[in-house]
Length: 279
Figure 1 (spheres, rainbow, N blue to C red):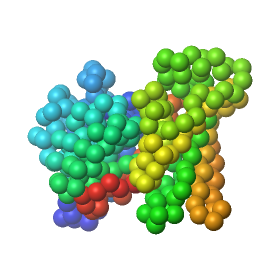
Figure 2 (cartoon, rainbow, N blue to C red):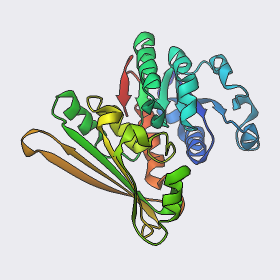
Figure 3 (cartoon, one colour):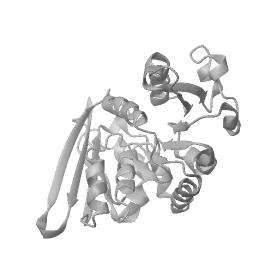
């Protein structure tokens, strides 16, 4: 960063594995990219002690305005975007690390409108979604007719309750389809596991959460990586299929490559105006 160039101040909401990674990157080499850590908030504030300087700890999330941030990154839980996203966007750009929150139609419309009125950007990180901007271009051109996202993980890599959780637990011996249908219905059932699908829905607003199909599969033969497959189809028999293998520790919800993908997304979050932007 050149001398005199202003820094973009970043607030991190959530201090799990991904939040910790982003905080370290910002502390280690954020300044060379024009980024400065402004605050870190976590529901359990004790988790910040000894690792985050006291002056960077935000006690109450509603006090974020005092830190005068340029962009807020949520890597905590979908409820954060639903409860605070509108307030965030009135004051700063906002990256939704849990885009399953937007499967709630009221939340999606509210945040789209907040971005439009404020001139701030609602950023959707690509995460483990490969080819998201290509999907977006197809959609913008009216060429996207169907989109399916399939996610395959070891049963222990899911954080599921209810019927889906029971299915996952019963999949220790054989590959099992946990869900196959519209992404909107799946997001509230698996809010921590299908953010990639939610990002695809935001990349394809003509289909949206009701039109994009999601398939969730538990496979005991995938102990050290996750698989994300996408299939986009268009007119005249056009189709594109991708398959992404993401290394992941056994039982990890988030694959290793997704961490660096988030950092790369953050680096492009500037100057996109009052709209939704896949980054």
